[in-house]
Image: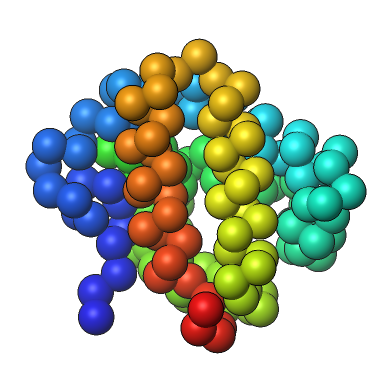
Length: 141
């Protein structure tokens, strides 16, 4: 089964402009807010520790921004740097079950609420993130 690599491929050409609706500033704010949340909130400690085990939060902030930029139809910096994107392969070294997936989505939702995006855009972003998160995981919900 093919895995969506970006919002354009996952949903069709009309989604190409979601990046334009979000904007670079709000996308950076989303990513930085997400990592600030997982760093300071004890509930999200597991996510924080997972990112520390990798290349650290600084690296994660940069690469998540690069990935989400292309995912939402903007510049495909992650693909230019690493090639084809497969979310399952990117995360194969991490045990991701329903609880961790839901925690990630909750932290992303909280981070989105720190942006100045309209509710409709926030809902659309969450719809895409939820769909993408559903493609990753080593066990079924």
